[in-house]
Length: 272
Image (cartoon, rainbow, N blue to C red):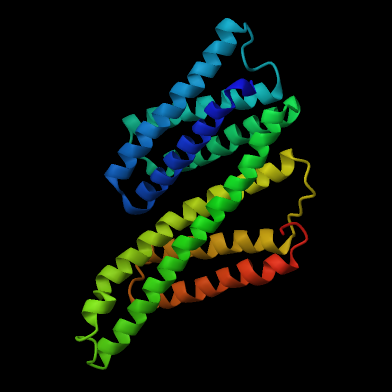
């Protein structure tokens, strides 16, 4: 199986990018992101189908005879349904969450199979998933930091304009509407990356036999940070909060992120 390890890495990367694009479309109704997500998911389906048909017609073993083979077939079915729904209907909610769950199932299959094989390449793949988990989490923190800085610039510009001092600073700080939009877009990118990072971390911990704690402060803190920024999107998209109020919320959310990243890392029993 893991003579084709690089193909499994590629499929996870493409699948993750597809989930991220579907999330952007889900939040912003972005047709360009939807088209990109559809074609990325189509690539995932083609690669999955290659392995599926190879196992069925070359190895003469249809992948439903064991739990772990069933996971791969399950993930393939979910991808197939997502493509059909995306092509025939405009139901972005179900498409995004179906793909998110499908990504989790496929990841569980690949890492469990790698752990069972016990080969050097399998162990390497498991370790690379850990590196990807850390990388995605830190990159998401980078987007949240950028969003925080834009919110700070918004609040400063807002205060200057209110005191009739902002005209001379506008060209340096930027237009209020522009700052608000860029801050929102940064959070929109950060949330799916952190979500994928958490999924990778949880699956890695289970399949690598690591001593994993659901009640570890860093684990709970990361989930809480994800919830805080998800609430930001809800307040923005559902409740219609914009401008000063959402900028203040974003600033408070970043302080929570810093507590999780700096303090909870030191108090964690699981994370270094």
